[in-house]
Image 1: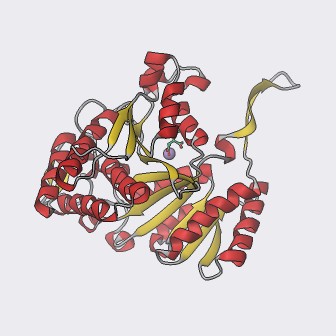
Image 2 (image 1 turned 90 degrees about the horizontal axis):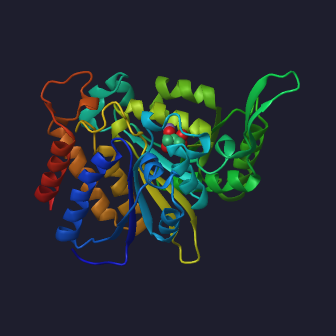
Image 3 (image 1 turned 120 degrees about the vertical axis):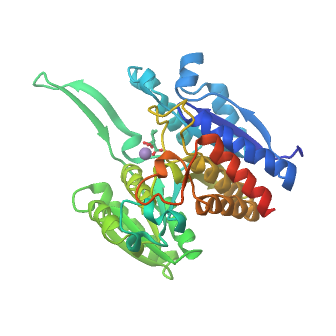
Length: 373
Ligand code: IPM
Ligand code: MN
């Protein structure tokens, strides 16, 4: 394989993470052989796998590798084996540490409906056909990280737990800027969601989104919505949205909801990006939005498409390889058109489809790449 100066850290993690990553490795190899798109790859442990070996869900050495890499390709973390782990050692903390220390504040979660899958959505085909939404989730602040947080016994002797939702002006502005910039390359529309009716952070969020819009992005159409109303509108008329920007927790929930419009959580990739440095390079981590799916892990049933499309996003956003990203996305689309379906996609009308496992789906994508190239 061609050597390169593209440094990639692969973190397969737990559950179905390693299985879907194995399929992406085939595509990485294909790109190296057929397109001379090579990577210098390092691989390491994260989540429960790291906890078992090192006693922490992310070792300091791994954190260093992630900070040095041009991009991190991530699988998934967590599983019942570690449910009883101490809160600070939960597998999820490994992922949260990566996001925080790499300062990956902008999480891009596209929800796109493939024509071949309009019938796999739980909504009517006419509601979801052609759907193409980009959710931008703030990823390094809000209630996921706000202090103080914890547990205590209150004055009445009762145990209570608390988390803090906190946002600074800078944090709101930088993620909204990403949304406006992206909108300009799409339908030029941004919907900003919060709960300004009940939360101080929501009021500040709306003020700052509005100010930034006036200052720099007045050419983009900006609307605001309460996050609960957005949850409803995403089911009622999802096609009205282009770019949605929202906080960490609302973004977590709303992106899971949006994924189901497309038919399956097993389809959707995401890119988590930091601020550009002096050379224009952004730290970046790419991961499917699905979790470790312990119920199907190790059975060869998982859908490798979300991880595959995460790799395609990496080609596009970290390495400016738009053509190669298009190629991977087209291969996925064609394989779906040809009727290949992992179990998660076998809902609704299934005539003309072929049920396949993880490896068969990966092989079908590689074969389609061969055909396209
Ligand atoms: C996600 C996941 C994570 C989150 C977990 C695994 C920490 O649900 O990426 O959406 O809540 O952010
Ligand atoms: Mn989530």
